[in-house]
Length: 346
Image (cartoon, rainbow, N blue to C red; front, side):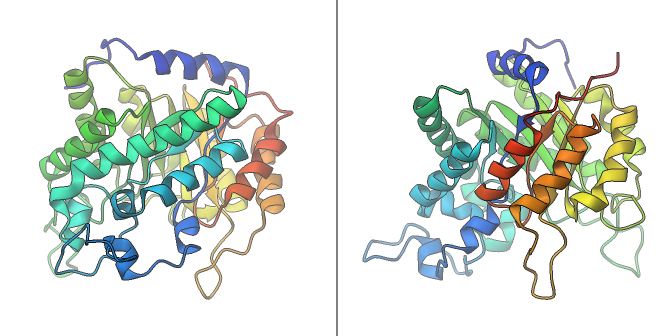
């Protein structure tokens, strides 16, 4: 059950206070930074450099970016640190696919708790280093992705009633993930890139089960993704419907990320801002991908568009998704600095 009466963590109170003072800054894309490292299969498994293999699997691991938490921890910590130095108040753990459901593609289901615990620890170390440098508090958001299955839509066009995953499957998978993130020291939980609200509901339920075991409630950030020009999620909800579906969790923020660049996101963000009685978070892609899947929008262009969100009083937290870099986050942080955070409706 969802128990909203659990005591709140100290980080919850600190985040609330900071969010009243200014627009908070979230980090940017992890995948973009990992791709720039040019890692090999041996790097992913930890078998390079003459060392004994860290990971043994019959399945290829290249592309399993979450696994780098265990096999290339210094590289992941450095990426977190670069975002913090660029101005991020909140950085996400590298755990977007760290559920048993998503890791089944790589045969790494048994590593899930460790991935989440160590992913949070890495981010926490980087944030502590950044805070020691400039005295600004930093926060770790345990990143919870949507998984690669949907509870609302059949993957088989010939069997519309079939589901590849159940609510309880998702709840159990998310529960293991969130417990690991809490064990590693996450300050808040970010349920992101939501294309199916039923998946998100399972994640919310799992979070509150984990919070009850922990004895305290962490702030929840909930972020959906609008998949095309229809202005709806993949499972068919408008931003307004999405908000009313997750409102019961009383999230610290609700918002949108991924799929669209800032310009295309704006009308959907405005719709959400008009109905939600909590903080609004937006972290768009660096434009739309080109024919090669790359993102061409530069830091200044992205920052200018995100600054428009702030100028119009739509947002409380901003950052970047696919294609964004520390340079994008630095530019965004500077661009929104003159603007006050959105006023939360009473």
